[in-house]
Image 1 (cartoon, one colour):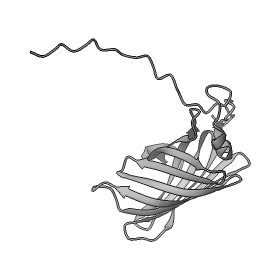
Image 2 (cartoon, one colour):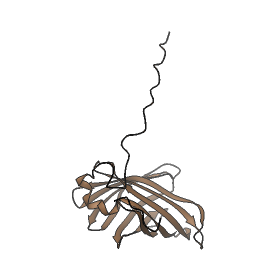
Image 3 (spheres, one colour):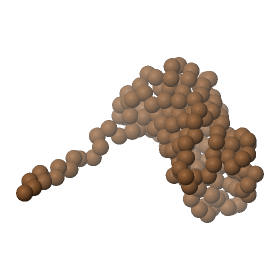
Image 4 (cartoon, rainbow, N blue to C red):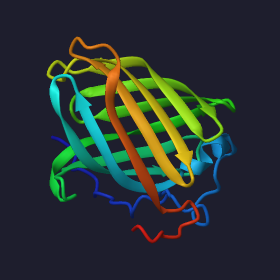
Length: 194
């Protein structure tokens, strides 16, 4: 005879939420000071293309947040847009963590719902972060991505980035670039762009 299950205990909501507002929540871990300018929510427009796909325009939202530990949580959502800026379909998504390694180095882990994960190593130089893949792993059904190179920079409170990708037999080739405006500052205020 089996014992009955004990009563189910359902805890309250998760008590350690992440924040993009440095005035609330946990203190920023000192290891994140080199990445402090990135914390917040960013939105903007980008352009994409690759040798085997037609060029396209997209809109994107990127969020860098923290929970007091020595890493940033990163999330990016994008959607294709037409010539008038109207959304036409969902596009790439990625989620991951940026982990400073010392004062000037960073490791980045990114997962994509299309079936691959990337491990990056890179450097922090002022407002610029440059990343190159150390490893790419993919599922059996994912497209063959073999390497990526990313360059991020903050210029006049605008996040700029470019991604070069090696995939499906092509060497590192320009793939994505965007310019994103800060819509929620690390101090919590909304900008006029939100």
